[in-house]
Length: 169
Image (cartoon, rainbow, N blue to C red; front, side):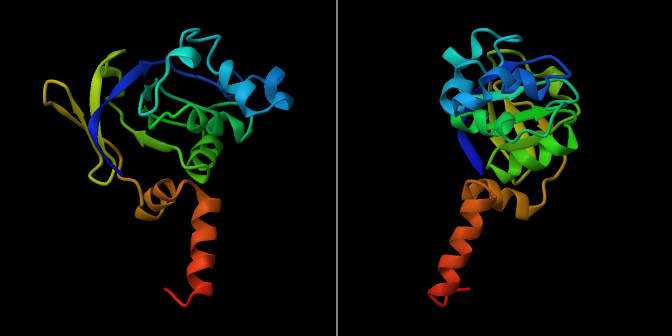
């Protein structure tokens, strides 16, 4: 869960909803198509410009709206390493961890700038900025961090079942 290389920040406003993340008009067309339209209403440059390991830093209430799991899955598909915000929709929070997307709750996320390079240490609950200053995040339970490291709930359960079949703990 430690990310030693800097992660580039994409700043987003507060109240980013699930329809902005995974537009309803693209849902039946598959995740590849949905990904091309991710955040187009808020950051038209996002889907084409995001790179694996980039992070989203947003305002409060990230992921409000419907309970569609694709709103978290699309960010995993695009390679987003984490979302940092002061608060999340409860449904989005659970869906994100279930699909392996790291969410860091940080009340001081507004101090992080668009394009800034930051380093994440989720286990320690720290964000380190390029100038060396750190921001503390709300601690994440170990079982949720383990789920993210496994790639989500289903891969984690599959791994557990395989280990049980082979007599491992």
